[in-house]
Image 1 (spheres, rainbow, N blue to C red):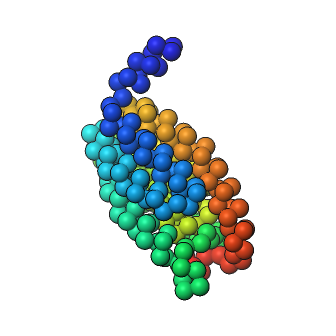
Image 2: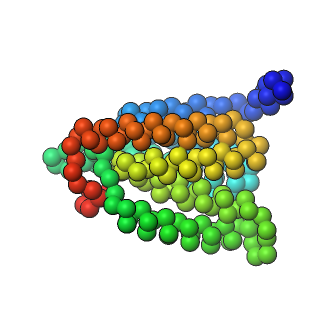
Length: 209
C-alpha cells in the first residue's frame, strides 16, 4: 500500500507540485487577510491553466484565466478597495437572499454549460461537475476579493467536489490539496468571523458589496 502511494507520488509532475505549493501559500495568506495571497494565486493559476488544459478539463482551464485576472483585482481591492473611512477593505457579510439568488443562477448556468461541453445525448457527468465547480469557484473568488465572510462556506463544499473531480482525471496531488483546502476553509471561516466581530461591523451587504 505504502509502495503504491509512493509510486503514485513519484509520477506526479514537478509543475503540479509547484502549483500546489503556491496554491497552499495562497490559502494560508488569504486566511490571514494578507494581500500577498493574490501573488501566490497568480503563479499557481498560471501553472494549473496548462495542467488542466492537458487533462481535458475545459472549464477548469478557463477558470484559471479568471483567477489570474482576479488576482490583480484582489490585490488592489484588499489594499485600496475600502471607502474613505476605511481605506483597507474590511470583512463584511451578505444577506441570505443574495446567496439564494446566486446559487439559483449558478445551478442554471452550470447545467447549460455542462450540456454545451458534453454535447447532446451524452451521459458523461464530468462536464457538468466541471462546470459546477468552475462557476461556484468564480462566484466564491469574487466573494474573497470583496472579503465577504460567507465565501468560506462555498469553498468548504466545492473544494471536496473538486477533489473528487481532479482525482478521477489523474491529478492526485491537486486532489489532496483540495481536500486540505476544504478543511482549511473551516479555519478560514472561523478566523474571518472573529475578525468581522472584532471590527464591529453591524451592516450587511448593501453598498459595501
